[in-house]
Amino acid sequence: MILTGLLLYSRSMISMLFLGRLGELSLAGGSLALGFANITGYSILSGLAMGMEPICGQAFGAQKHHLLGLTLQRAVLLLLLTSLPITFLWLNMKSILLFCGQDLEIASKAQLYLIYSVPDLLAQSFLHPLRIYLRAQSITLPLTFCATISILLHIPINYYLVTHLNLGIKGVALSGVWTNFNLVASLILYIIFSGVHKKTWGGFSLECFREWKSLLDLAIPSCVSVCLEWWWYEIMILLCGLLINPRATIASMGILIQTTSLIYIFPSSLSFSVSTRVGNELGANRPGKAKTAAVVGLCSSFFLGFTALSFAITVRKIWATMFTDDEEIVALTAMVLPIIGLCELGNCPQTTGCGVLRGTARPRIGANINLGCFYLVGTPVAVWLAFWAGFDFQGLWLGLLAAQGSCALTMLVVLGRTDWEGEARRAQKLTGDLARHHDDVEDQEEDDMIKNKDLGTNKDNNNAEIKEDCSHSFGGGGDQLDRQYSIV
Image 1 (spheres, rainbow, N blue to C red):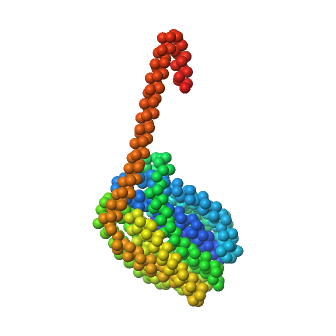
Image 2: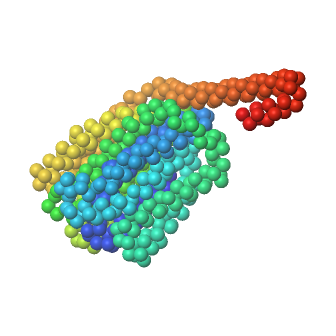
């Protein structure tokens, strides 16, 4: 799962490298566009898709496989519907950025990037649910294989569109879209030809248009939790536009966010694994094993945090040179990287803890924690340090450090007070209610088929009686009536 995350991350890393070679303005515009896309699009779709994670994980553990296919259909529909207003927002991005005080040239480049990224919303609407659908069944190697193929194609696609066709920033955006569609297509082909769908997929069902309450009850808090964290990072990019040198700080912020995304792969992969394992065990009514999985995951997260700190300190002076030759951007990035390493000491346990909460179908708690820590602690600290205390760019990241530390501490307190027996009972109720509704719908459809069959039989009998009566009364006229009833 970590390898899959690294492969998918390399897609955005390659895009940033091509943006950097196009110049400082393109790098700043692309970074701003990605930030806006994360705030208004990708974070929302990713968060909503995570609502299916506890349902699929617990349903698979409870051996109620039909719920996975049904939940997959509902999630795809939900994401497609959500993409419509996001598309309208992206097409009007420039005026929004200018209203927020961004530089005109940077906003124009960012607008261009996002216009050509709109089709990516369609790809993401299928990609997120498909990944969770497979992950809930502990199917990870095919994900890695499909990601490898798509990323191997991503480099020549970028070269062809950006360099050969000279499309510039438009080519970088289109190459990302193309690569995601390649990944979606390869996953669908795997699911079809491997037979994975046989136990979980009963074909497209009209039932996917009904009973959305369970999915929405989990999807909306999951979305809020993810968005609150993602949005904080992207709000920092907007604040960078208000600092002394916006081009350099926005470009550096883009590089640093890509760096945090790289480091985030490790705790997020651990989080996905823990969420799946906890959900499976609770669905199978094994609360003791679910608790053990949570404890092992949290212990591993602390090790990941210290590893991330060591990495950030080691590469701080050379990391930015992979993206740009601008000395000011390189210096800003080197100054902040050690702070990012310290942030990961809190981020790794916090991210893993969110996975435990998703596995126990409690995303609402994670949303409340992120709201309090990032916006009531982190944001005031960041704004005060950056604009009033004189720390400038560095102050924004010190605000993140305050947010991550308080977030991790709160998460550990919540998880330490978890009633695992009670969570197992909740899991049985969640999957049981969904399964009963599915069975009720199937029974109703079967009853309707029987009634229709009985009505058809009665109609045939009535036709036969009429024909017989007419034959006795009018001789061959019965054949004429028979043809008339056949037409009816």
